[in-house]
Amino acid sequence: MTYFIDRRPNAKHKSAVNRQRFLERYRKHIKRSVEEAVNRRSITDMERGEKISIPTKDISEPVFQHGPGGARNIVSPGNKEFLEGDKIRRPGGQGDGGGAGEGGASDQGEGADEFAFTLSREEFLEFVFDGLELPHLQRKPLKSLEEIKMVRAGLARDGVPSRISITRSMREAYARRIAMRAPIKRALKEAQEALAAEERKDPVLRNPARITELKAEIERLAKRIEAVPFIDTYDLRYHQLAAQPQPSSQAVMFCVMDVSGSMTQNHKDIAKRFFLLLYLFLEKHYEKVELVFVRHHTAAREVSEEEFFYSRETGGTIVSSALTLVDKIIEKRYPAGQWNLYVAQASDGDNWDDDSNICRDLLAKQLMPQLQYYAYVEITPHEHQSLWHEYEAVAAQFPERFAMRQIVDAGDIYPVFRELFKRRLSQTR
Image (cartoon, rainbow, N blue to C red; front, top):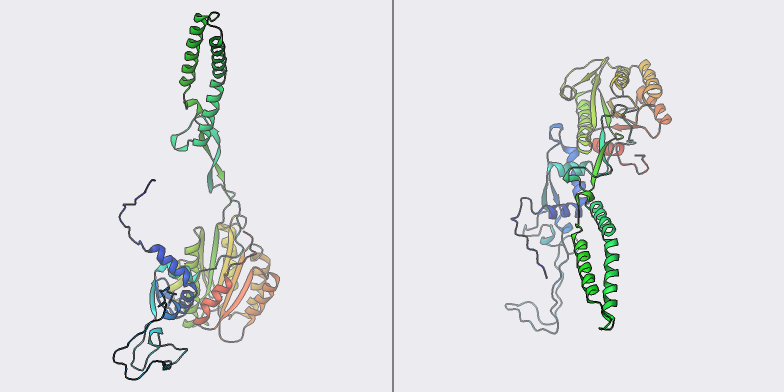
């Protein structure tokens, strides 16, 4: 029997497997704590990890013990209250028999704390964005063949050692050995049969010279068989690689935010938190998603990430200026035939009445036929205005690709975000 002994020193994070098992086992409790943490965090605090607590009763595990077995007589020293056969009343307290060991406070002030557990940044974001994805993401061919994949393109007799095909090379060697040895083995078998027939003859009729000749021939043929090499350079086969154009799942997300005077600082903070959540989601789950940031009041501008989140520019409200700019950017840099196009818009719904009709026409006739998905969030506790009602007409025309939600306060951000970007089982990939 062979024994394998691993003498490697323990690496760092040697309990990583147990940690992942723990996260999976108590996923429901952790996810609930993560959702509460997202709602109470500030913008600058969104990316760090989180310390969560799990009630002790939820992490208790069954334990197997040896039973007492048989009849036992026990003498308890100092017992002045009970005699044999007396029934002992259950201890009082709140809950179903829960004492100090289950997290409840006893009359002596004793209890058990909840189990505290710290999530890393990656683990925290994993729970935040669990079950979310970009809707209707499709694989589109690239006209400029920038994305290629090296694929196997058959076998050849020449190549580098790292690409050798062991299986095919051994198969070629086996076939060659069979082909080269077959006639020799037939001749060897005939010589052996002739020798056996000669040796079976009567000694008087036996021909010694013939026997010597056959033995020499058998020895020569056996050496020829042994001389056939097990593998030869002729047998070697190498995998050949060829560049093959690949469809791309690249996407671009347009983040459109209203920064007009009607947007209070609280409204802007909520919009920033929504877009920051979207930014972290895209950064974590997708490698080839570009972000385009557009701010607008009476005029729209494409801005940098820093300016988008922290600029204090303000003014009136013309939403169509942002939609027109998005359309121009798509036409110039992101052709719909090559890119998956997404737009996320945050506004308080305030807009010039005449401009809302223009927004509806821009969306229905120019933008939506090109877009994979449009998400609109209206940040207001008041009644909806004309922009919302015009957008309802667009949503009725494109029910699968246009979504609208209202955010009243910061506590609505995460539930709305999950509803907008939840995974769709029937989605075409």
